[in-house]
Length: 199
Image (tube, rainbow, N blue to C red; front, top):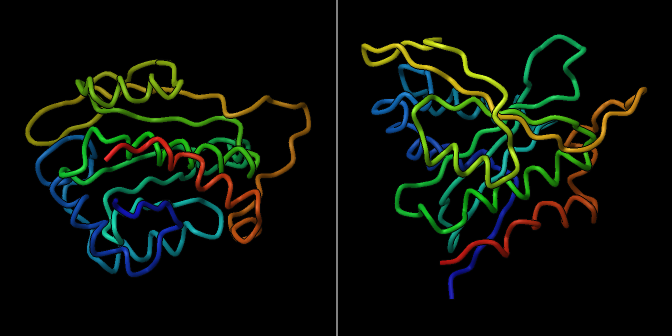
């Protein structure tokens, strides 16, 4: 039986992350990046995010099979309780529940951090991603028409939203990952999706 795990990303994960992400950049409009980032850039993204935001990786027998992360929805302070999510799975591990597992753990962590809303932007058409996000409870809230240009074509981007938890009148600021990562509640959250994978 394969050894499966979900964990916080490490600096050494930059190479397999780039191996998953590079063909998506080069061959699709799923992301609006034109050129795949360098290893140095990937490492910088991880380091800059990890104090506050969760970046998770899914391993099958120590090999990285997918990753998911949360980031800022917008930079202005009134949006501090909102986050934008992304997930990418190695092409050899599609339809095994890895994306579901990663999102389940990611959302559980965001909940204990204190985030309220999660958003996902999906370049359309992408019925697989739309179906996946809707299966996770996301609701379509609108579409930007012809907002992205890539590979000689204008693309629509739809937006899906998930309420992580209620919206109090005076919310506490979200807790950074650095304050939670060694706690029992964090360990429970990071493993929340592990049982959903079927290899």
